[in-house]
Length: 552
Image (cartoon, rainbow, N blue to C red; front, top):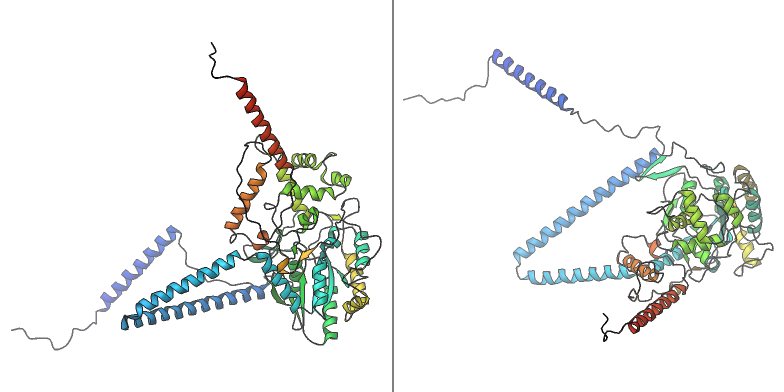
C-alpha cells in the first residue's frame, strides 16, 4: 500500500527552468509586437487636451464640463427609473391582484401623454413667438430695438414700441446694425433723424466667428469680399458705456432685452458684446426660437428673443423682406419682383451688370444668364435667379440704402413726456462722441456703388395672440389642365402647404410662422377661359362629324 502524501508538492523550481520560461515569454511578446507593427496598429495615445494658446479655451472647457454633468444626471435618472421598475415588478410578484389595475393606469397615462403631444403639435407657433416676446418685454429694464441700417424705418414695429411704452418704467434704445452696408452720408442722416426721438447707437457686429460642426473657431482664410466689409466689431464700446452708465444711475442690476425683425442681427450683437459664440446665428431667418439669458457682467444681463411676427396686412415688399420664412416657402418670383419694384432700375443694372429691362421677368432672365443659372436644355433658371436676388437682399452682403423722410414727425405712440423719459439715465453727450468715432471707423460703400431703395414705411407686427389669423381649412382641387397651365400653381402650393403641416416637427417654427405673399386672381381667370375654349372646341368637333352616316 502506497503511503499518502502529508504535504502538497512544492512550487519551487530550478533556476535553469525559471530562466527558460522567462525567455520564452519575452520571445512571445516580441513576436506580438512585430506583428502589430506590420499591421500598423499603434498604442492609444493619451488626449493632450486643449492647448493654452487656443482661442476661447475657457468656453470650451465650460462646455465640456456641462456636457459631463448632463451625462452624469442622465445616468442617475436612468438608474432611478430602473430601480422603480424593479420595485414595481417585485410588488406585482408579491400581489398578483394588483396587476390588472396597474395595466389600466399605464394605459391611462399613455393616453394622457398622447393627448398632450397632439395639443402641442396643433398649437400655432406664432402664438408661442408672441408669448416669448411678451416675456422679454416684461423682464427687461432696457429694450434694444435692432434696426437694419439699410432700411431703419422699415425695421421699426409700432405695436412693439407701444407695448414697451405701456409696460411702465422701461427704456427703449435703437441700434443701427449693419452700418458698413450703407454710405457714410446716409448713415449720418439717419442718425440725426432717429436721435431726435430715441437714443440711437451706430453698430457693426463682428463676422469673424463661424459655426462649423458645433465648434468655435476663427476663420483663418479671409474670403474675397468687397473692400468696405470688415470682420471687426464697431460700436461695442459705445453701447457698453451707455448700458453701464444707465445701470449706475438705476442703482441695481438690469436686464437688457434685444428685439427686432428677422435677420437684423440680434444674436450677432449679443455675440459681439460677449466676444463668444453663445447665440446661434446664420443666414436663414428665424433661428432664435425662444428667449435666452446671457450674462454680460455681474450687473447687466442680455436677453435674446425670437423675431417679430409680421402682419399679413403689410405691403408685398415688407412681407418679402421682413417675413421669417425661407425662400422655398414663399413664392420667390413674387417676393423678388416686389423688392425689385422699389429699387432704382438704373443702379440695379449697374450693380448686377445686366442690360436694361422692361419688367421683372426680363431682369431675372438676364440675371440668370449672367450668373450661369440654367435648367435642362439650356433655358435660364428664372426662379433660381429670383431666389438668389432675394437671399442677397435679405442677407448681409448687398449694399442698398433708403433716404430718411424730409420732415421729422414723431410717432403716434410717443409724446414729449415719453421721449424725455426714454432719454433719462443715458449720457447722450458721450453717446454722440462714440457714434462719431464709430462712423469714422466704418468704411462704408461709395454712394455710386449702392442701390437706392424706396422704403415702405413702418412694418406692422402682431403682439396679441388673438390678432393672429387662423388658417382656413384646405380644400382639394382637381386639375383640369396639364402641362404649361398657370392654374396648377394654386394646387401645387396647397400640396406644399399640406406636406408642411404634416412635417411641422421637422421644420423650424420660424418657417411655419411665415406669411405667403398674396397672389392675384389672373391665374384662375386664365384657367376658366382655357377650359371654356376646350369645351367649345370639343362641341364643334362633335357637330362636324355624324356617326350615323357611312363614309366610303
